[in-house]
Length: 397
Ligand code: NAD
Ligand code: MG
Image (cartoon, rainbow, N blue to C red; front, side, top):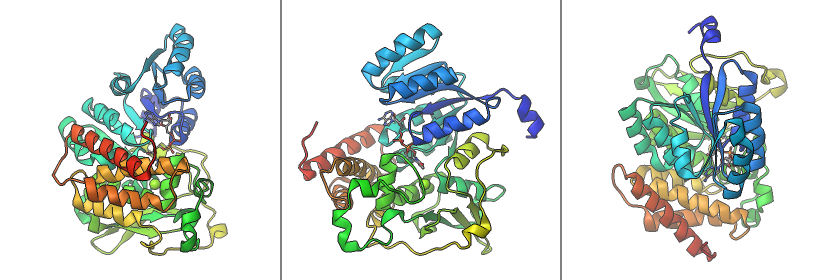
């Protein structure tokens, strides 16, 4: 499509799920850069009604959805008189993505909660710009089924998967030999292993290269994030675990690479700024000129790579194991991890307990089988969370 043509096309209608979070707010930064090309039609959040209100007043969507009942009352009082529909709860999240004015659904919420709305969007034939990797980890087979059946499209937002997606433009899937996902190694790449038991949430929340939401930041510190991304890559690019490898790259400049059958490797590089992959998911198949920072090659000087250490980061081999086992194993891994991360952030368990709890949950609860139904996945998710809570000795709410 030529640039001239896109300038005259109607703006793409967006639904931003998780608009108040790290990816959500950066998505809105991109909308601010391209007001003629993107139009926000739906904004959603769990609890932050004040920020959602501010966003709604700025972007004037057709609809906003919030989970929190108090926030819902407040938003309805202010926004309904302005002609903005205000809805509450999970059902509303699933119906708003099917709004006729929505072309692209940006899935920027956290965790398993993203699966139902993503499936609802695909069932309505929408494009989904996916940041919410947990959706593919737990329900990858269901998502692929929905893509086949309804003809929607998935556009990766996660920087590694966006990099691979960009490397694959103009290539044939059968020519791929290996995907290499890069990982920063997080804040504990060089910390003495015998001090890992004493890692505090504050230390784990300090990522060297990226500023992100709390859950994905802890996942980066344990490297579960990279494990989840291996499973995400499996479902996005339809390759087995043996053809997806992980390489630690502390500078986070090479976002990932693809090696082809002729021995050639393509990589995508850029400054560590999520607005780049978010923008690509929204502009694809075009590129839109933007003032994001460029790499200063001379100042950068060097790029380092090393293999990940499985002793230091046991969550990574656990995720490979879940992918190989299939059935409900990835959903159990994901749910146990979500629960364990929450307990760690509440200072109820140690950093090193996260991997232990996930491993035990997988051993006890994972069931084999080809494509678990949504109800099976929901049950596996609930069971794994409860199991982790019980093991951790925490009160069940
Ligand atoms: P965040 O915690 O900053 O924001 C999450 C958003 O989702 C908020 O708007 C919140 O209100 C909403 N939300 C959370 N739980 C919800 C629920 N149960 N129901 C409805 N809404 C809910 O998270 P984030 O860092 O923006 O991450 C979002 C997703 O993107 C995650 O899956 C993460 O792994 C992925 N991701 C994030 C980054 C990043 O740089 N932040 C990079 C790559 C991938
Ligand atoms: Mg990533």
